[in-house]
Image 1 (cartoon, rainbow, N blue to C red):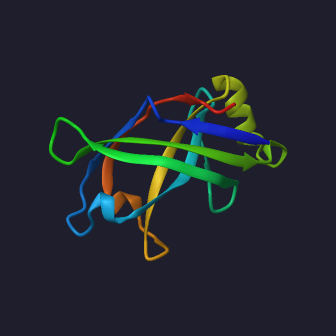
Image 2: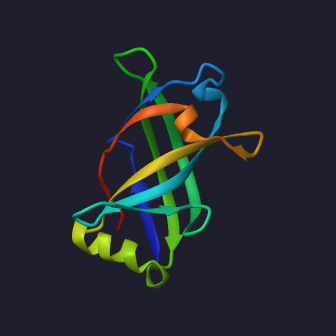
Length: 128
C-alpha cells in the first residue's frame, strides 16, 4: 500500500543542537513514522517497516529562535499494513493521521538524531 506524507505547507519544528554538523550539509531522509493508538505512539522505521519511494522538497527554514528550524518535505512510502498490526490499529484509531520524523545521514551513515536536534514539534498529517 502506498502512503504520502506532505509537509509542504505544514511543518515540524526542531531545535538544532549539534555544533559539529550544519543541518544543510547533511542528507535528510524519512526515518520514522508514528501514529497514536490512544495510549502511546506506535513507531515504524524506514530500516525495517516501510520503503521510501520518494523524498522531495526538503527545506530547513530558520525559525524565530536561535537554531530553530521549520522542516518541510514530502514523501511517498510503501508499506504492508498486514505485517504491521499494531501500527495498523493505531492508524485506525487516529483516522490515518501520522507524524513523520526526518533523520540525517553523513557520507551514507545514519547519525543519531538525539545528537543533532531536540524538541521535535509533532505536526500531524494524513497518511492516505
